[in-house]
Amino acid sequence: MQAEKKKLQVLCLHGYHQNKDIFRQKIGSFRKPLKKYADFHFIDAPHLLHGAHSQEGSLDSAYNTKTSEDISADGRGWWLKHALDEESDGLQESLNHFERTLEDNGPFDGVVGFSQGAAFLALACILLRDKLYHSSVKFAIFVAGFKSQIPFHSKYYQIEAKLIIPSLHVIGDTDEVISSSEF
Image (tube, rainbow, N blue to C red; front, side, top):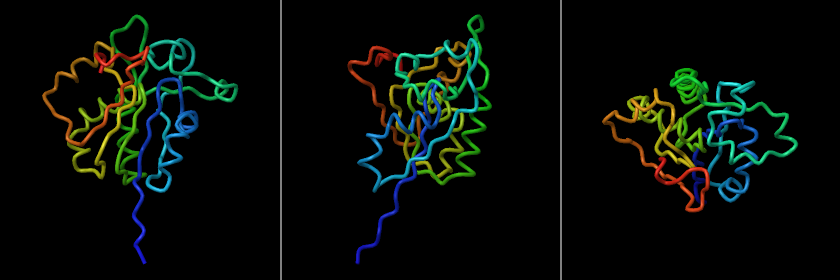
């Protein structure tokens, strides 16, 4: 009798103005053929979007083809951009939330991020480099990711640190929102 292989545990980070339920639904066709190999775990970004934040600061908005069910859903973000400000709010809270999730709900073998979730994952890989190295995370998948356009975040991309876990970057040739030069 063959021993059953342990499934991969994968943490999933949604895009801007989405939430874990919307993202779970959107990638259902991706998850279905992998269900005997991996369990996917979805978390909400900690920042609820409302008012001006619900329409701004997002390359993700072009990806959102909302259904009637989605319209009533709470949109969330990994950070909030202010229209007249070069900084953003919420990155540190999101990093803390991500760390707690890894510690409290793990171990996770990998992390998948979509759009702003992928941009956040890239920043987390830079800023939490040592913690990720000592965690169970063995890979990262960045789907339609981009380099944050927040001027305050640009300093993080200057850090001379290589990604210490294997990564896959999925960028569509026909993507009209994110060009390959933006990541």
